[in-house]
Each structure stands twice: as structure tokens, then as C-alpha cells.
Length: 89
Image 1 (cartoon, one colour):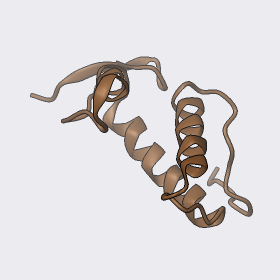
Image 2 (cartoon, rainbow, N blue to C red):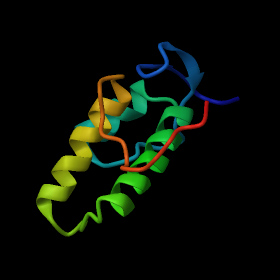
Image 3 (cartoon, rainbow, N blue to C red):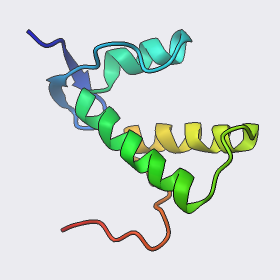
Image 4 (cartoon, one colour):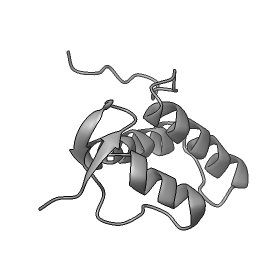
């Protein structure tokens, strides 16, 4: 049986992640409050941001930017979209 969490993005009980997505306290918090669905959507959005904005993940500023965008995305706040991206209706 899948582990269920109350997803902070969708505000409902959904299947949780199998493992924390990153080490430390932040990983534990995400593991406990973010659904598998929301995390997969974030990973897709993150990939678009990295590609469209040509982020260098070796750059601490780029990593900080992605962390900020992740928090906004998962908390349903206004987050940056990739330029030229038109979401499906």
C-alpha cells in the first residue's frame, strides 16, 4: 500500500514520495508534505527553467533560484514560468 501524505500543493491526501527528495531537514519536510504527483510536476517545471534560462547548476545563485522557485511552486505562490511556454488548457 502506498504511503499517503496531505499534499501542501493540492491540499488533499495523495500518494507520497518513496524517499526524501534531498538530504537534511528540507528533504524530510518535503517527504512529509509533498505528494509524488506534485514532486513530479516540480521536476518537469524545474527542467524547463534550467533549459529555458540556461541555468548552470554549478552556480550557487542558480541553485538558490531553483530552491526559491521550488518553494513557490509547491506552496501555490506565483512562480516563474519558462519564457515562451504555453500550458495546455
